[in-house]
Length: 168
Length: 275
Image (tube, rainbow over all chains, first blue to last red; front, top):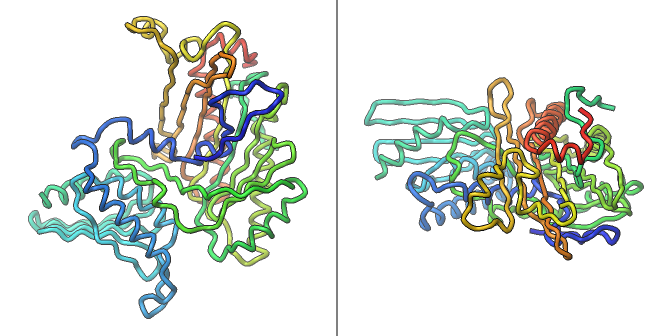
C-alpha cells in the first residue's frame, strides 16, 4: 500500500498515522478484513480453489484485451468494469464449487458456465449489479431463469449449492 | 451551497483530519495517456502540483454472500491501465485524484488550528470538479461518466490527553466499548482497535455499507491516540451523478450519526458538541 505521506513539521508526527489520501478507495484494507472475520462453513478456501479462481480472473483479464471483431464479426472485448465485478460473483461460490468455463460474449459481457452431471448453470455478467442467471437441474426437472439487478447476490446461493453438491 | 440537514449532530471542534468524496465509474473508453495532461490543464490553476500514483482497483459492495467468501481482489486483478493522477494545491490541503474509472476529492488537515471547511463546502467543490471532468470528456468526444460506486470517508485523529493512553482505554472514547469487560481481562491491554460494518438500505434494499474502523496510532514521544475512520460506500441509484450525490449525502449522514452514536458524551464535550 502506498499513500504514506509524512506528517507536518508544525504538528507532532504520528508514527502510524498515514495520510489517508485514498483510504477506503483503497479497498484492500477492508477486503482483508472481510476475509479474516470468520472461516466459511466449509473451512478456509483450499489452495486448489484459489488456483482456479486466480486462473479465471487471469482469463477474464485476457478477454478484456481482445481486439474488436475477435469473433470475426463485430465482437467487443470484454468490458473492464465487468472484469472488475467478476470477483464479486466468484465470491458467491464456495470452496468446493468446480471451476467455471468463462465465455466472452460478442457484446462485451462475460458468461460463467458450469455443465456438471445433470446440472447446467450459466451466469452472464451484463454489467456491475446486473446478472442474468439460467439454471437447469435435470435430476429434479427444474429450470429457472432470473435476473439480479442489485448487489444482493443471495439468489445465487441455491443454484451454486446444488451445483457444488452435484459435483461431489 | 447544499444545505446542512438540521437534524445532524454538530461539533464545533471535530477531530476530523481528512474527508474524501469519491466516484467510481465504468472506465472511460478511448481515454489515453495524452488526455491526462490535457485534463490537468483544466485544473492547473487550482492544483498546480502533480504526482503520478498506481491506479486503484475497482471496489463494489455486494450482499447476501458469506462474509468469509474467498478474497479475490488482490493485485492480480489489476488491469493494465493508465496511471492515477494526484493534482494538489501547493499547501497540500485539497487534492483531486483521477484515473480512467475514478475521481476523488480529498480535503486534508495539514496544520494545527486549520479550520475544517465542512462537508457542504467540500461537496460543492467536488460537484464542480466532476462537471469539469464531464465537460473535458465531452470536449474530447470520450463519452460521459456512468457511476457504479461512490464513497465518502471521514478520518479522525483522536489525540490522547496528557498522561493518558486512549489506545488502551477505548471505553473513554467509544460507548460501544465496555470498560468493565476490558477490566476483566486477565492481562492489561496495551492497545486495541475494532472494525464494524453496517448495511445501508434504500427502500429495504441493500445499497451500501457504513464501515467504521478504529486503530491506535502512536506519537514518537509516547502518547497513543486513535485513528477513527468512517466510510460509507455503495451503489448510486440511479447510476447518475445525481444518484451519486444522493448516496454521498446519505452516506455523510450515516457517518456523522454513527460518529455521534459510538463516541462518548465526554468526548463530545471535548469536541464541543452543539446539537
